[in-house]
Image (cartoon, helix red, strand yellow):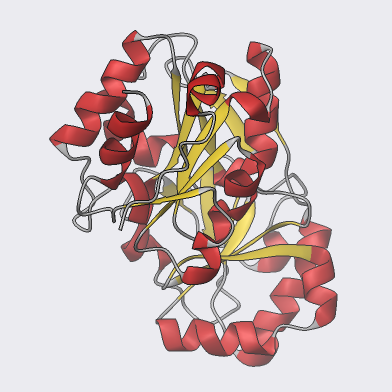
Amino acid sequence: MLRLLLKNKGAKTKMIKMVALDLDGTLLTSDKKISERNERELRELATQGIKVVLCTGRPINAIWPYIEQLGLTNVDDFTITFNGALVIQNPQRQILTEQGITKEQLALLHDFGAEHKFPLDVLDFESVYPLTDLTPSVYQQMLNAKIEFIPTDFQQLAEHPYSKAVMASQPEVLDQAFAELTPEMFEHYHVVRSQPKILEFLDHDMDKAVGLKALLAHYGWTFENLMTFGDAENDLGMLKAAQVGVVMDNGLPAIEEQGTDVTLNNDEDGVAVFLEKYFN
C-alpha cells in the first residue's frame, strides 16, 4: 500500500533539493538491478536540478555501474559510502569528508569474534582485510565487487583509520552474534543489520545521516531540503533526519514507523512510483 502525506505538499516539494537512496532492498530489485522506470524518473529529477545521491555501505568501486547507469558522473555528483563514513566525489574520487574508526577501537570486537568463533572483515577506505586469526569469512564471495581483499592477522593491521567492520554469515549465525553482544559493545559501536547476512560495526556516532549532513552543507542546504528512501536498520538515521523519509513496503514494520511515508516494494518500482506522485 502506498501512503502519501499530502498536507502542505506544495511547499515541501519546492524545498526538496536532494534525493538520497539506499541500494539493496530499496532502489535495486531483488536481482540487483535498477529498473528502467526508476532510472528514467531519477534522471528526470536530475535534469530539474535535484541532486540524486546513492547511499550505501559499499565502496564506490563496487557500485560504479549503478552510478554510470543513472548518469551521476558530473564533477558535482557525490556518493555516500561506507554508511556515511566517506563522502566522495564520483568522477575524480575526491574526498569531501572521511571519518573512521581506529584499530584500538576494533580490539573489543576482535576479541568478541575470537571468543565466540565469529568471522570478521575490517574495511578501510580502499581495501578489505579478512581477519585470518578468526573463523574464515564468506564476505568476499558475498560482496562480489572490484575491491582488493588482503587476508591479515588482526595484530598485523596497520594503525590507520578504518571505515567499518563486517560479520558476514548465515542469518541464524548473525542472530546468535547479535544476541551475544554486550552493553559495552553498543557503547563502542553503531551496530546495524544492513542485510540478513551482514552485520556491520561502525564508529558509535556514524550513520548515513552524518555523511548526508556534510554533503547538504557543501551545497548550502539542510535536512529540510532532503528526501530519503530506505528499508533497513542502516537507513534509520537518514529516514528520521530528512524532511521526507520514504520507507519501502518490504522494510520491517519498525523501520516503517520511523519514516514519513511508505511506498511500494523494491520489485514494484516503489521509488519511481513515489517520486512520480510527489513531484507531479
